[in-house]
Image (cartoon, rainbow, N blue to C red; front, side):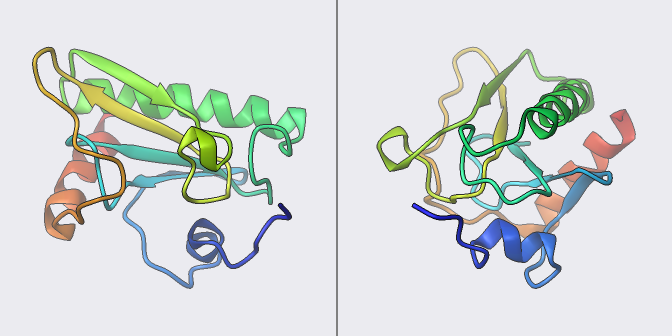
Length: 138
């Protein structure tokens, strides 16, 4: 499958769709997942066009994981999360639904189940408040 420049994350990068940003630099963007699996579910994407890990240039991959680690630490600290789960899906069979490579940062607490992926929209005001906690921990 060829990269689709009209995927939702490409539109967010171009400013054509809104997002609640947590972190941004010249190479990456981190923002709140609008259909979170847990409170604080955050996404990190590169600013290059790459559908999956196999399309991502090595230098962009290195930067993406570096920023993912930085944002994950802020999610953990800012939300006082007991654990952090990272997920990166490649292809429909793996559960990828947006075909622009991205990492999911999912805060975890023992005994608290996750919601199903991409099923229920979150309250935007609640997401904005959570994003402020994460930003404060960066």
